[in-house]
Length: 467
Ligand code: URP
Ligand code: ZN
Ligand code: ZN
Image (cartoon, rainbow, N blue to C red; front, top):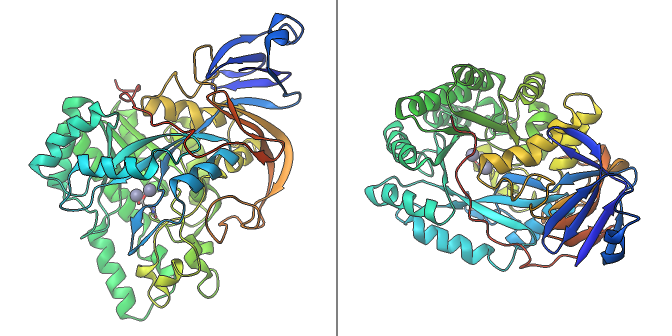
């Protein structure tokens, strides 16, 4: 199957240029000057023509932080690998990296097997795994090396959630020492969970039970403190560190300072921290539960710092931390006790569109949009140049994006398996037009042509940014 994409503007981190793209089978065969391929032998040999006139041609989005079917707070996130990856495809994300979750008392290899059982044969787009390490033992540390052999060489640890995922500083240090030996990445949920639990207990004892208390009991200082501590532990061990879902300006300051010294510290933020705020958590009644995630949404003043961090590359990646829980019956588990609201916000479908609003508003360039949404995640997590770039030999994961289309985000029209949208009623400019995964068109003409099982597991290499 050969597909020729004509008339579009290819966007890469280096800029935007008009080009025609020839796809042969699962990979990109060639790029050609505008008009040259459309008239020549390529045109004759193409089985399909995609007219991208007036549109942008992007490498497929890579969402490096999702949670499909994740066990949390006595329930599971509501998207399966099947529904979540289909929604990802609708939004132009053609690769996800999801988190396998080690339960206490279990091994990493059993965890990996379990996550393969969930995902294999069910995904609409390609997928990889990170590993959440919640039980640091001799066995776990040894298994980290075997995980790398299985294409999983990034390990998330938690300074939050005591009694569940929490790791002590000593355990983090041991895991970092092990990561240093193999070149693996430690990913950190950086919030001081011990202090937070005290603030939560006090709030509940005083009868402050509304969703907004979730934000008020997790102040930015406790994200910044944990971020600084993680950076110090990474420095002592020499391990690379990736701060996940960074939300607070003070935490970003800590990352910036470390990067300025040349330390291998990286960070991601998420659309919810760029567009939503503590005010949403404070919506009347129990409505704020829709916005409970950790770290929490911050006062809107933090958003300008995050955009600046994205421009300066102190924030290198935008992922969604997609972790959907239905409002009815799941978020409602926390009625009368905010600490029981399952943590997480849906978003895998809307990352490219939401970030594109940053382009429209002049916060980031087109090139930077593609870089933080596709190219850098590919490099950060060992997928480049197979993914993250439109170049000969790369997988033909391609999005034809209409930058002028208008759409209104809503639970009534989204494809995620969740009964609300955190962005309900938000009008955005831009929309995916055609989405291709390894040469196969998944979305075209407002219709879905994908299927579960098209997506393949990606064995990833090491981070390509280490100095
Ligand atoms: O609230 C969040 N972020 N839920 C997902 C789990 C995590 O910590 O990433
Ligand atoms: Zn986390
Ligand atoms: Zn997460």
